[in-house]
Image 1 (cartoon, helix red, strand yellow):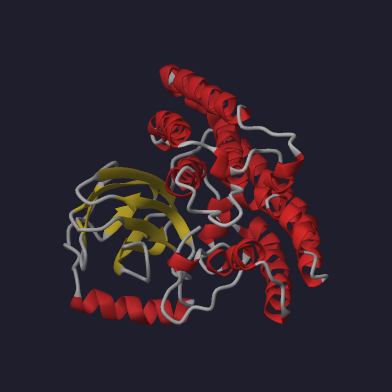
Image 2: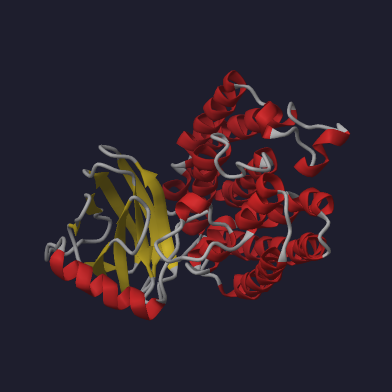
Length: 382
């Protein structure tokens, strides 16, 4: 789940205005292999270079602001090349990406809302170092996986929508969690388009001013908290199906690289840490563990596809990742349920039954995996 974006045209205009009044880009050039220093603050986003050669680019990010921020590399049409969310105040992060020649922007989004402050980035030169063919195979396999997940999601969402439109609250509840699994396992791809996630997966506290609340979580509140289905909810159900079919059609056009796969795996763990473990994501239905598992499975799929190259470059890292994925999946299996009362939970216990100490244990396991996973991109893109 991410905050809303405006249209590409509005984004470009607003970004230009923001850049004119807040923050500036130093006019130095980044040489091959040199990192771009990105300093984010509450109203600034400064970068140490405005031009880099095509190939691997590394952002050394420091958040000097008072709130969590998000830093992105964006295509001209506002699609995301790579990103890092939830960079806390006073913390640093290294983001590795692959870029072809062209025009891009680096965006800092304080509070992870709105367009933020953007700086131009020109990527020069036409030659990118020859890539290991195993990585091309990994990208192709991941694209196929993402499409399979999207294709499998549509009939499940249709089942959910049909139950809503029939006014059957219990049937809709029972179909809710299962309809989200394919989305959760490939969410970084959906987020890369910029406009789909805000329409389908935004929570009430993630809405921008003037944004209409649509998607899964608006319906979740109606089903579990309000316990009602009316004409508005039936319209929202139809819109959810329409928006997700749009996502399904676009998956094949997503920009996917080995670095974006690795960074996406880390983003999925971040989704778990900031939404699922806390219970904030599915706050009405308490279906968080089903989403949790989808995120972990998606992250593991990316890792397994990249593992042959990663293992060759850093055996210690892949050994640690194998260990931590196994530990986290084993821990999640403790919360599987066959209790009829948990029918709506897609095979897991309701998250409100998970104690504070158990949530801490889950959080620790996620953090233990996230730390080595953050090194995967730099390991495969050498």
